[in-house]
Length: 93
Image 1 (cartoon, rainbow, N blue to C red):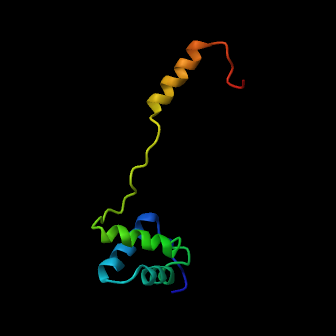
Image 2 (image 1 turned 180 degrees about the horizontal axis):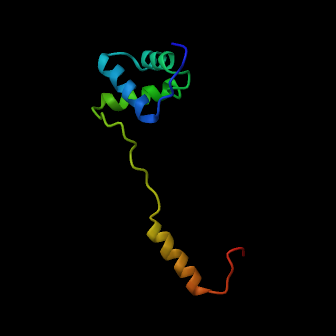
Image 3 (image 1 turned 180 degrees about the vertical axis):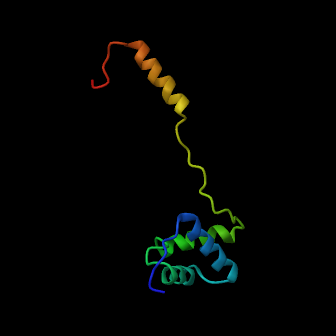
């Protein structure tokens, strides 16, 4: 097939999980996905190994882990405090 299909993040992970369940190595899976779709289908073999390690630990979720971030409520409270403490201060200062 001459036309290559670009996979989204979830599609890549589904392919990796499928190959993992078939018993392929991360390197084999990476090569197969890149051959079937495109050279950048999996960022690199290291990414495939990371997912295979996750699958080996029996974590088959294909979702990203939640990342810690500052609550917008905290940012809003801080902004309000700054504005109320000096309402004449300009944001460019």
